[in-house]
Length: 127
View 1: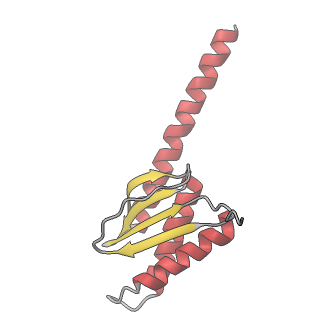
View 2: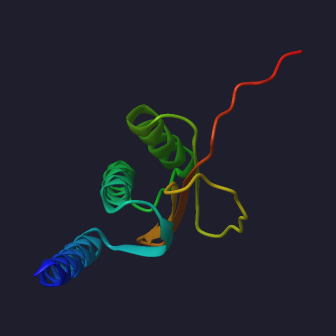
């Protein structure tokens, strides 16, 4: 009987994952978001998408203020999830970064690309 319970638990987790993925895809469509690469839990991703969408919608039509958007996302994530978050926003850029586990999201919204990632903060060793 124990094997059957484990199998039921496994299937339940699988189905929950499918449902969560479908809900995420529906939200992506609504916000015009496309995930390019991610190592971030879905609730954090959704917060980033919502924050980016809200700030983009508040900007004058056709006037992207990439520094303002990057600062808004960085502040939002630093305040909510602790330091040290970094954000790069633009229409064309390359990058190569090291990030903390679970703290990386690269996505596009409209025609804007956003890289949001977290790094570990270690105190300086003063001798």
